[in-house]
Length: 99
Image 1 (cartoon, rainbow, N blue to C red):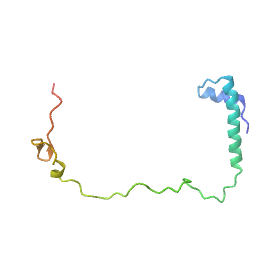
Image 2 (tube, rainbow, N blue to C red):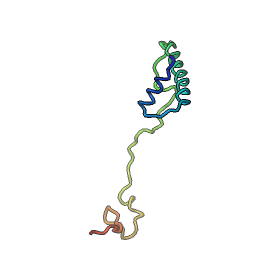
Image 3 (tube, rainbow, N blue to C red):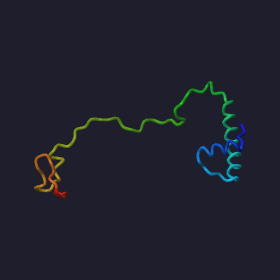
Image 4 (cartoon, rainbow, N blue to C red):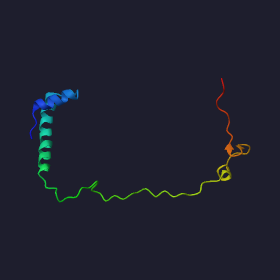
């Protein structure tokens, strides 16, 4: 299926792409080759080929979610500086001032 120069110019105008004469000639030839390849693919009999999502034998790489116990409050705050703890919370230095 050859593509003509006018179609290349029309598509370039729609895409607001400025093409030189050399580019128009080059793209006309290249797109004709691509469209010919697509036309040939249409003739391939794929009726015996089952649909696939991927040609690679991929398996899930993510591990299953496993519920595990978390840290206790004492374990989580074990490295807090002395005096830097208020019950279950860290005490941090105030860095913002009220206006």
